[in-house]
Length: 204
Image (tube, rainbow, N blue to C red; front, side, top):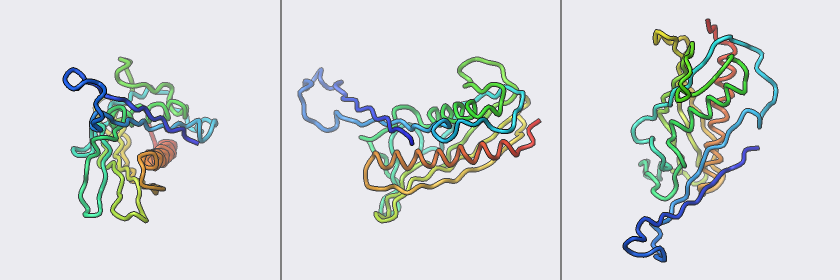
């Protein structure tokens, strides 16, 4: 249902000193993108329509879970950053862009666009990602976790909508592909729930 996009980039910056023929493994990193779209689930527009323009700001990510590296929780309950496996872009940017596109496809709002487009809007959607990692502490019950707080604020900064989404999805095997697929499933759960909540929300 969701295609996994993987880009492997060989970094040869050290070639100036050692030459690009070096076999050092620290010259190779794997880069991944989350790939979640509403069209992969349904082509039906949402029932609710609000005649406003919604601007999506870059989502903030709690310290320790931000930037691009994969984060794991190990058997000792400690969190580890994976130097070799990373998302292709900042997690906050990636999640805000996916959210913006999903809500645009839903048709709930007259227009949904990112703040970088420079468009004036009636409301802004903001997010705070407080947890985003793969729990590998139990090899038989590994899972991806995404916890995100979402706000919609008006021009004065007053919150007209706020909710927290705490999602988990099983990791099928101990591989980067499986971690990304499970994280995709968490994002899908979050966006499905967010759309349902916005349909019910008494937005002005």
